[in-house]
Length: 92
Image (cartoon, rainbow, N blue to C red):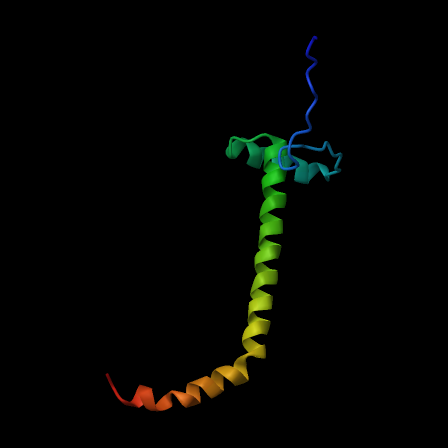
């Protein structure tokens, strides 16, 4: 029985979608210059820029959530601190 090659779909992280984007001419020229400086092609540069933007957004969101958690627990932290204030005064 002859074997046929099963066509497998690559994992989502490896699949690439082709997109069409429009740039003002001056921005495209600057992007191409940056790509040359970084020894990347245009697509690699744009992917890296989008990735950096998304990571920055995620980091900012995390920092905001962390700050909110600190604020939500501020009273409990003060109470805990007050409970152990005498230990601080013992001067190990």
